[in-house]
Length: 382
Image 1 (cartoon, one colour):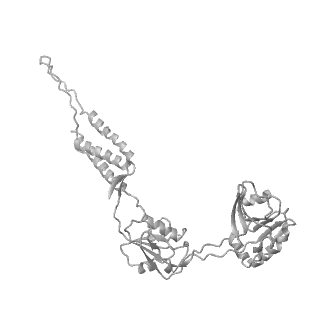
Image 2: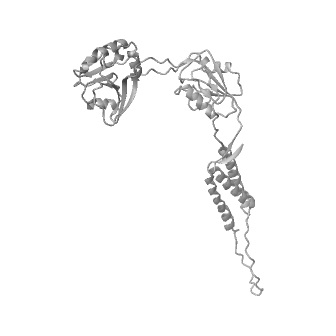
């Protein structure tokens, strides 16, 4: 354990120690003129020399000490390496606290909600889960001292998980109680509806897109000429034309609407091309176009079986849907198999500030100073 100063510039306030010294030096006892007989015949004596003298030393020292503590408070003293071995028990919101306390025999532990801010468990209602449990576990592990034991109480099924088990800097006691998770399961989004705008050449690929919609169990594609506008912002837009993208389509790109264009569609000069999909033979099927106008997908060849043999493969609908509508990452699993692993590097602990103790000492010294300054013995005789 060592002492450090978070704001050493606060010691500049020690210059205020001159203030009580000047006040005590300038203070003089009250002098009264008393009339008495003339002393003209008495010989004059030399006047005594003035010497620096401080009256009421206890009050002066108390005021100096009070100002010194204020300067120390501004410098923000803190302690590092403070030992803290108190056990913590984190309970996932939505669980019965009584059942958790019955399952975990830890009477001297500090009980916390596994929620943002980690509030203490009291008579108030439980907070609403608004953050993935994996993120909360890492944050709690980083905020706790290295020697503090941690117990986590979770239901049978967990939501909000990562693609792998959480790794923490300490071994965690993982307590699973038989209670369903309060969060609902994630639903699989429906297949996107196809909205196609095409010219005469692009219409030759409509039969493949109709078969694609049938494989996706999606609604029948909305097809029209390349002079018609896109009307459904939630659909997958396909531009099968050699004309440049209209301004209305570029505006929808800025709003995030998905777009898949023909291989004949002109590409901006500043576009950056990123290959996304190659078939088994290594032939490019789909690429991503990124430019100042937006980001969209582009077929590498016309929609014909002769130029894109992948159109006839059985897994073509599944592979295309995985690109235009990526599946959600699995975030639900049985809690029994998701106990956090140990082995992560320990996090540096924040210093423990001593401000509350200094404020208490300053308040007590101020009361003592006021008592000494207003004591009856300083008022003089009546």
